[in-house]
Length: 246
Picture 1 (cartoon, rainbow, N blue to C red):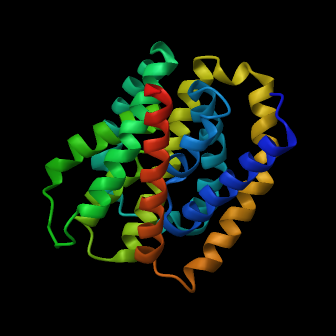
Picture 2 (picture 1 turned 45 degrees about the vertical axis):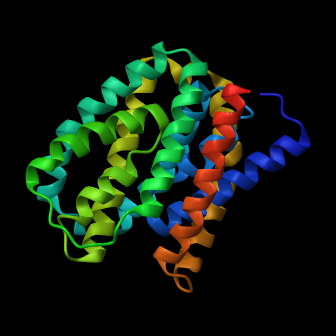
């Protein structure tokens, strides 16, 4: 796609920032980058683009830590996640872009508000909650490129060990991204050579963001960083809604 130098700089900056978040939390790239990228290109291109980049990022985490994932929870979530991904991809490829823009804005605002207002009380979720969390997470993964926060909510209510939770979360994101890649590939989305070239051009920004994210983790708690992220997501969602209505 034909971008100006200023637009290229903005795209690189937002992709790098998004993968700083990924390097810390293991998800959140679409929430961070999606609202900005949709100002410069159609949502139907943004989601497959981020799927390519997310897969590249997730593979690194899977190779390093995949064996520590909770297999029982993966087995509970995966079938429903796959079903939801199929439904979401079908909606993405058939729905008008203007409607998707509105949906993305509502999604971003709703996520940010619930994250800011949620009470931090400890609760144990029953295993049956894998059905709604996996299904809805799969739909959001295909529609917006991020069902990660839904999986994180479920796993936080199931797993006591934080490291086990983080590795299981990272594994889910990798598998979810692979599912979206295959769906988009079968739909012919990646026949667009321009999209593939754009993803390749952004790989350095993605890897740079991952590197910085790992180093930030050493000095900043996840909770502190996510509080900042929630404010950014809220502002981005409000900007998308303003663009849709005005």
